[in-house]
Amino acid sequence: MEVTILMPCLNEEETIKNCILKAMHSIDKHGLDAEILVGDNGSSDNSAEIAQSLGARVIQVQEKGYGCALRAGISQAKGKYIIMGDADDSYDFGDIYSFISRLREGYDLVMGNRFKGGIEKGAMPFLHKYLGNPVLSYIGRLFFKIPIGDFHCGLRGMNKEAMTNAGLCTTGMEFASEMVVKSALNKLKITEVPIKLYKDGRSKAPHIRTWSDGWRHLRFLLLYSPKWLFLYPGLFMILLGIMVTALLFNGPVTIKNITFDVHTMLYFSLLSVVGFQLVAFYFQSKVFAIKESLLNNEVWLQRFEKYFSLEKGIVVGGLILICGIAFTVYCFSIWGSADFGDLDPKRVLRLAIPSVSSLLLGIQLIFNSFFISLLMLKTTNQKNIFIKKTEEARFKEASIY
Image (tube, rainbow, N blue to C red; front, side, top):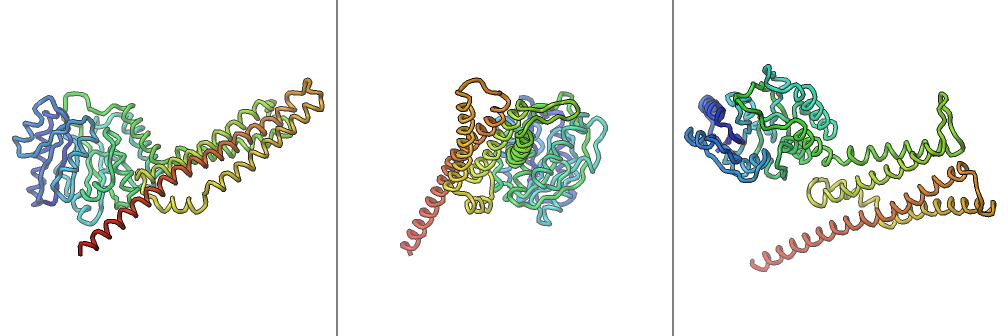
């Protein structure tokens, strides 16, 4: 079978019939070898019965969630290609042939673009049309370099084998973003076609929740892009913190009657420490994600292993720690020269702040190096176990023959 038309469904008795009839018309019109599959996600109305009466194959998906219904449908689809679309009659299943054509050309994921095809009046809420979809789609393009204008379109086509191997795992509405992001991370061929969005045929409120589902999408994009979540903010904090701390080291700075002194120096020094920890989180999360197969980037890991080692981390961290100790000893010498009495707070703080920051950074670097090495050691052990098992399997196979 070439095509499966997949419809996730939850209480869509008002619209499921129109969706199936339009899909059947498209199948007949283009002579497709196809099936219609409905992933029923616990409907309490007659959606499943209506779909079965029209000849659609219905599977019951017990685990709740948009992503759960689609993942179950993808796994049980009989077609080489899958066209998925919402069962609320907001998409015209009679227009699916453009998706199939692109899939036949060799694309693995074909996205619909509602902004290019047109949005019927009242079909998309104001916040979704002018804020949610454009902003989240822009973030997705920025983070992952994906040339897709509509990340959340509910009508899309995919190669079943490629999508099954992509490792999709989310359960909710963020599944729409995960499909696009993981397709890009797995180097799949992605394109888009313009489609029109119609006002859905339901008399009840839609399933999507503007703010909570929007956050789930944004959260997913951030978690799968440690560069933008940890590395870039961390580097910015480190550079800004060091620059301002260095600027105030020799004395206060006045700009337009506003004087910045040791208090400002303290906060920006703290900013550099926090920034360093964010950068460390980036490397930790990257190693962990590759180790757990959340990201497929062995080349990055090999390059990182080439330049990083526990010993290098200890040496660099130790040098920074020694600088902090030296500053601290100097501060004590100043205090000692005053017979350990009262000192000018601003003078001492101007030295104490960078010394404390250096102590913190040195300690952080040393112990973060140990932690990253632990993650990498586990990765190496897993590789060795895999190699050993592979060699044992080859040995058994050779002994049989």
